[in-house]
Length: 135
Image 1: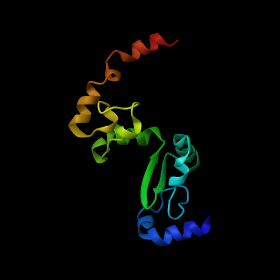
Image 2: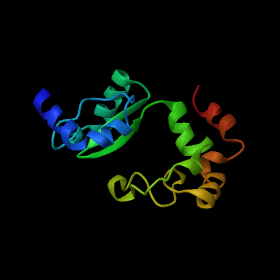
Image 3: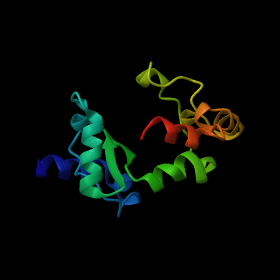
Image 4: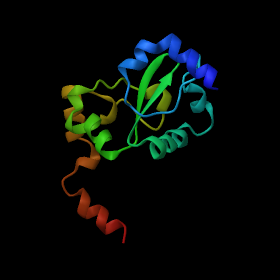
């Protein structure tokens, strides 16, 4: 495995240098960390990386870096407080029927603002109602 990690570093060294300092599992040539996500429960793999490496984990999908966010603060930055700093491509095809184009989590800018304000979970009296549903 160490040899394949060394080969990955030789091939993608400049990209890896740009991401230096971000924690994550060692990538192996040619797949990076993609093979770890090929099982039945890739979300469990991502959760384990969060436990091992913290709220932000650098992974490699072949030669492309990707960040796995496990921390609520970091997720909040991407989806809310710094939403305009992050472009979110629609993962709709991969997540159907769990998520649709109406979901505020996969849109940007004014479209996001409109969908967030009009989302059922944004109803003003939602919290008291939820509290009355679950003891």
